Image (cartoon, rainbow, N blue to C red; front, side):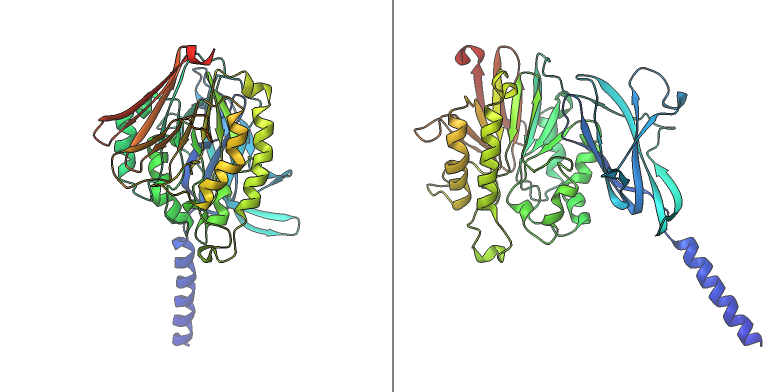
Length: 400
């Protein structure tokens, strides 16, 4: 009898211990801003458990966040709150050039059977001991804008802070990641540990980050989940945005080898994808929003140019499918990555018979900063020590 009681007691203690040992719901990664525009922005974050999630939004008017109940915007799909660890909320109806405050929250889903849902505990970003997060929407009427671009980091997390610092990223409006921030995509943890945790720590919760996918982000077992984390609410991974005097086109240039190459195991269909993208691009450059912008800049990972005298299939596709459209559109500059020797250098291609606009390729261990105002559009590339390697200036007089 004593042995039976002892066994039962041990079982109960094991169960209780297991319950207490269970991890509490908490925000694991984020938040970070995606696809900031004039009247909308998408906020993304990840919890450690299946949950519902929402954003609480407040004007940046000097009032305390707890002054009154703030409007909640839930992560939903077609009117149903999403039950997932990964959350994204698209805030719409915002005012251009306006600052807002926000916090994110999650509530654990313990069980969902039929029409009954059992909820667990709630976690949210701390607004008691620290200020709420802030962001400012884009504004096409802004007289100037500035940005920083990194590419081909390939998981070198430690390089990111220094490169951003030499470009004075804190004084810019936004940051561009122009592809190959990882060498492959294997897990969510790898994605965040490679570069996103550092981006969130430094800027991404309050300063917009725009991401042009590179060819290495298409590789690995986790590659198909890319859009759960980046450009989540966009129809595709190619998109546009306007800030100040500059209209930006972000292209998704796909992979660099033919779809039939053995490296892709028959899983890719990028030739057709780029053809579909070209149809979209034609509509973009014929839009009034594009035509009315003082400056037009294209961001794409693979350039329409040769690498050491040879052009691969992917760049050739960019040259054949995108460039004829862009040649007629008055593009001021195309910013690329992809070509790199891991040296403090750059590649600059002036306009030619095939490409009638300049193409600038930033290296993997350098950083590019851009500035635009009513007089000029300029870009500069610096090495990790802050030495200026290249400057390109496009005066406004050249556009008249």
